[in-house]
Image 1 (cartoon, chains in turn red, brown):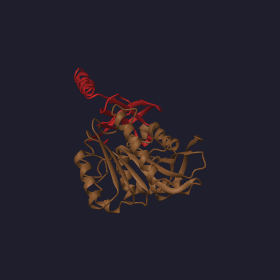
Image 2 (cartoon, chains in turn blue, purple; image 1 turned 45 degrees about the horizontal axis):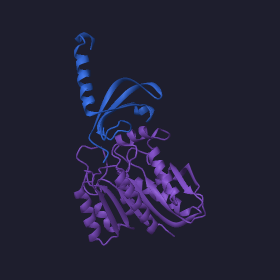
Image 3 (spheres, helix red, strand yellow; image 1 turned 90 degrees about the vertical axis):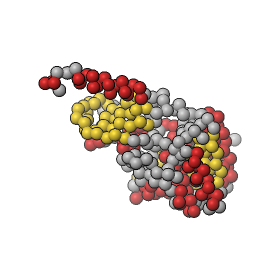
Image 4 (cartoon, chains in turn green, purple; image 1 turned 180 degrees about the horizontal axis):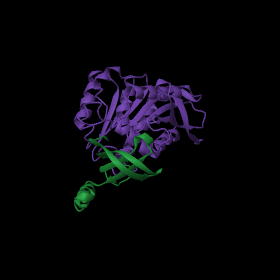
Length: 86
Length: 247
């Protein structure tokens, strides 16, 4: 079956998709069958702006190992920034 | 034998009078032909679903695959449309029955129809094929590894799909079920529970579960593809539709 637990959050920022750059309002994170990645399941992240329609989407599909490494890298990058610039 | 087919995107009037996109493939011979509604998997109305639809036409059936995500994402690419539909919990059951019912009516009304029509669905479409068969007068239905015919999605999942095994008494046609023995949704126990209910209700059915195959073993573009199971499955489908959708 295809639908697993989904985390949905509000985000602020921008993403670049097939329609060019657009403002982001939402992100979903889920572990499911990928569309393209060569794996049975992958950790998928959709960066979205539903107000601009379904095509306002930046998608990534990562192996579980890659996704954990990414999460650590994000935390590490943020931790290295001086507090006054965060 | 004359083997030309025609395949194209059309619009049909679906549930609630909505115009929905559909991919329609049919043999160009005189027929008459039985009709098959192809219910796409949760990843959507994608090139593979269209290829399956053409395969039914090549094998002597009029076939139509409605884009179940037309309303959420008109004109969007299949993966974007699927992501949108997924975030909203999938396709509501009532709307699905309306859309498939419209597709069945379309197939029965085309000039080269023999008046018979069935459904086949994969993944979420497997459950929806069963749902159509307990909701509409059909001649045959195929459920390819549909989850949540038996059992509920775990708490917290966005999917709005409850168990429908209790509707087995309303099954209107013979049912072919094709499952992977290594699938967890549906699990072998859930497949067995459905089979018990079909038996108890005296329904005509045929189930095959394939060792070494899990979910989505028909999906040729995914690592889940299992050629041995898929090849046998296709043969079961041709045999089944050959019996129940022939003139």
